[in-house]
Length: 320
Length: 256
Image 1 (cartoon, each protein chain N blue to C red):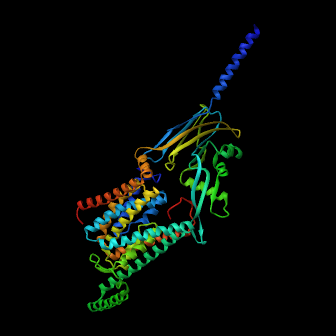
Image 2 (image 1 turned 30 degrees about the vertical axis):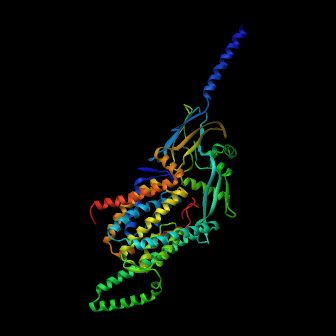
Image 3 (image 1 turned 30 degrees about the horizontal axis):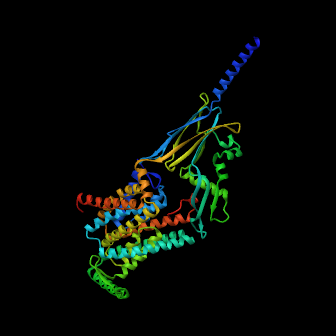
């Protein structure tokens, strides 16, 4: 069964599009990422023009992240205080990033910067998460095999390491506007999440994605938030970012295809719920290593796309 | 008296021959069914039948095209000698957005190149008339025109096929069934039939078809372009309601 898309000016298989939505929604619920970095290339592969694919993707992420946020909020996994601070930074960073791209487009070389940012950021994030999770899993196994004395000794060393790390972080902890985030169980200066939000916002705007795959590692490794709170808070922040993007894309570029968005969100909202339930059955490290493998896979595909000669030497404008 | 008799007989024979040949060489006519293609919610292209009568040759070419315009694309190349990526803009001028050519046999064997060019029939004629505007330095025109045709064929918007038009010599008729591509945008399209003999086009017929949005598709397109703020707000509300709605359903569907 086929459905015609009035803005994309193409006809698509209904089941294929709903299936894509389901798959990306599942990832969204599992990892707290919007899935933009996967969905946009997938939509382009089925013949959706790049500009419509990117804009409509933001629209469907609103649904998937709303569904996911609700599910995580019920489980008590959303740190609203942290989410709002990251969001404030994200909005400012997004505006800055859009301006950077505008300047680069005028001078040429924007496409190169976008592609390279994608490959470098995805590569670093994916590889780091993969090895970090692998290391943590190995450690867990080793702890299970230790005697009681060895375990106590290891824990003592671990505490010493943590204290040394805490000393190193003294500069960050001396920043003003210290706030305790009860839900995440951490205390940071408000400047830290706002600053990180700006950083992710700039990169997300350059790359044309919601930034979930960058925000999640930032929350885990830099803000030291527990994994289950990271996913819910990330979805909360992504929902608002994508509301802004959907409106701007509809108003300025007329590139949101509401029919395509409805088909995608039919799948993605259900997928997000299933992902959240599945996520509870998997351990944090297993989740991280899965996400890392997906990110590395996408990076490898992008590198191959950059190195191998394409079959067509012409392309429609927009997209990456 | 005899002279009048002979004159009458001659006139009768003349009228008879005149009627006979006029009948034989009646004007080439063509019909396209359907003449209007509505784009509905379930649209996935359509079957188009082009048929005609009054064909006094054994060869015919059917050509369907949109009006000439510009196609704005990006060209890819190697950046820094390593990475393949979009490097700049390339604009093809005086080319149609949709161009479909069907014939009884290879048009290059039916018509000399100058005739094809004069009547704008076939890829070669299109290639010669097209202009290129680009930021690329020292570009090979032939190569990029060929790439353009390949790109448009990939999008199903261009096609050139021979041996696909059926000719019924006995009834001086021709016909072809075409899979009209859903990728073809709304608009008016020219449909032309050329009767070919001895390297010349001896007769031509033409008509138009219209592709237009109807119903929900028409309303949504109108709203997206004429009331974009409202369209954006509706898109957001639909997404939030759907997201929360499914969340509620899952809660009702049985705990965690």
